[in-house]
Length: 524
Ligand code: NAP
Image (cartoon, rainbow, N blue to C red; front, side, top):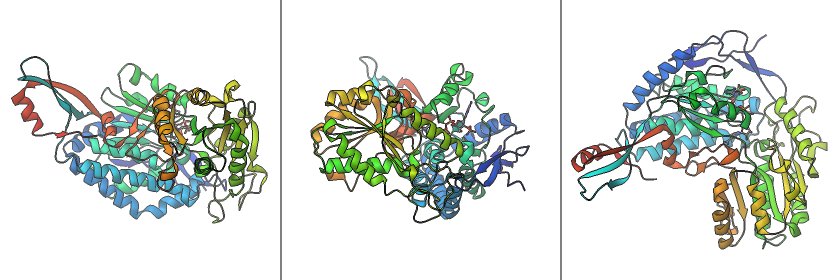
């Protein structure tokens, strides 16, 4: 018997796609869970409704009122959390701890924007910076303002964060007064669809403010108009299609891209074996490899250590990875669940073979049995640590992102070589640096900042406090230059920029005073 066909929500009503739809599977058991389809939907109507009705209603509210709506969303999602965990276990194959990164991470992010938004008060637009004199006489000045764009925000998301990936984008969009249409990645669309369903059924948002369209991406980009924005998260290949779509190329639709990234970890050359910095690196790399089975865009893919410590680090990471039990996330003995699909399983295994052209295997957990899962069915891949003592001659290792529990240890000769090798990632979301020397951390930030969206420094004094290399905190920037897509998300109120238009208003002091009286100054 066919499973349930999930409904789409668009143009203010629930809509069922035609046809049998695409099945969503349990990646551990191989069973079918639900189906998705948007075939036959009137996309033009969906976008026009969101743009016109949703946008107008949201813009009629103040930042503070929209922040209150975000708080209501937090309440509804928190009340329904148990169902989300069940869906994540079944559809993403994640352990409870890993599901929390996505589910609680998403809810936490909305809560953060609710708090930030409340401080913006009763205004409906923002002052950006100070007034600037344009001549000798101060009577005529320029003031930049930010007003919400009169369009819709289309989100095309990746499979690895069906909750957080929606809410980290939707929270700043809705706070800005911009309606959202979310198209989740098909393989894990269920959780996104269910969360939107709960928010819609709770009747929190104005009609048209939040829509979900599951299934094919065909035709979505064609609906975009000049004041719409599109935010894409996914592979570099799809990113190229989005960037070259006529909506972006000809209509200047604003476009944010979060693509793949070869994030690094760097150990201070002055670190000794078994020092605190050394041990912190070993723990963090192990954690990053195994959280969500390494399916995090921010996960550490390349680890740079002084050549003298290469073997000691390899041994220490391998010893920790050995303890990682892999299998059915429903079994409490399991530390790491599965990848999201058999396609990803095949892709990760193939990727490991590609990396092996330039690296040796330092640890491979795949000879161990799975816990409570059948190797022939489950999309489970155990951690694999690769290594090279000659990273300067490698190419593939600095180019190929394997989206699973896989990472490569690399020996560097001196700090200049380490910097050059890190930069061969051609722009990353995040790097972490492990050192007990504040001056070394500061030098690293200055030298490698241009290549990263975030630099996460782990020193012994913050060992118990730091938020984790791979965890994206809403107050910090997420996104990276170059191959990471060149996008920017979050960063507290900086995120509002994407959903607002900046305008220079050149006017008399009296007119600027009148304008300022109804606006809030944006304090980042
Ligand atoms: P993907 O294949 O590029 O898919 C991403 C999204 O694009 C999905 O919703 C997909 O829909 C849609 N899509 C596919 N073809 C499209 C087209 N021609 N036009 C418009 N949309 C299209 O990527 P993925 O395999 O899901 O994600 C894994 C990648 O995402 C990794 O490389 C990872 O590094 C990256 N990632 C980056 C971040 C970040 O924040 N930087 C976060 C997470 C993941 P269907 O699912 O229906 O095909």
